Length: 385
Image 1 (cartoon, rainbow, N blue to C red):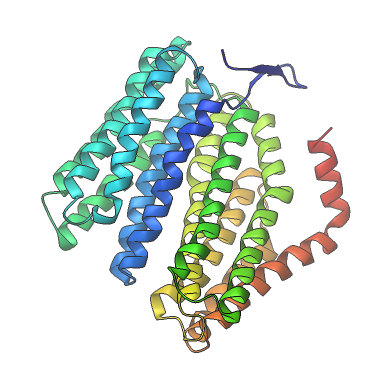
Image 2 (tube, rainbow, N blue to C red):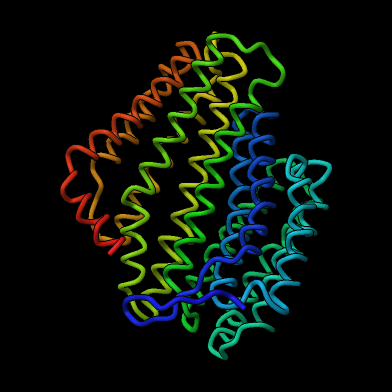
């Protein structure tokens, strides 16, 4: 059975199980494959394709986060369902580099299987009638959208990309059009699941450092780039987990009923996707930097590096705006600065461009730690009380 603990407000809180952590490993591979797709085709087309695939992978993972929030994932039908979904997701991940080419049909069929298993396990295994009714209410959209990807596999070029965009708009719109009433969100488990997937995505930045070398010589420039990439990933980790994750969980816990479900849908289901996209784009930029530290980055990798940092920070801005109803001005300014540095990033050596992004993130973290140290201490003390 799933471990359960009692929260301070009297609600029964679930704990993340080993099976859920095991389940996430296949998504580690999927994130890596998305980076590989964009790295092998470092053009605007490749970047767009990578982001479309990432959006689909993220939405699938999010669905299972809701599922394991309601079911005992380490027991009965859920255990079988998650293991089966892992197998299907593995095939989809293997097909990611060719998702817009020769492996498009394999990706589409495997991805549809992942989504269908989600609906089937949720419908069969949900312990509460309200949750079963809620997932059945969403099922037409959540199954219809990925089914259209099978159709997209028989097209190429703009037509294929157009179908993908329609699919994702339809997919993401489903819980807004049909709403998310009937579900029951366990705040600590939900927050922990999303915290862990952010860590997994940050791990892709570390993997990108090694992947970028690809057997090349370990020069002083490469060592400096590796250290800068590590510092950048560390600053991204700090900027989220130091306060943002704590406040977001607190707001989720304070919300009740349908308000909590909608906050989970918006702040966690959609806006946390911006964090993942930003991290993966940054990882692509780091990988390209490690590969050639003494030459300027081409436009697309430079846009990925600087834009990835910007998207990551804009995700924080969006989460705070939705959860706390206030604007994080310093992170908004930092995101704008990151975007403004793209023209410079294509003129200087790649190592310098990476150093600029690292300095920006480290400076932001340091500024906030000093400027808001008292408020930060209060928030952290309240979260750990």
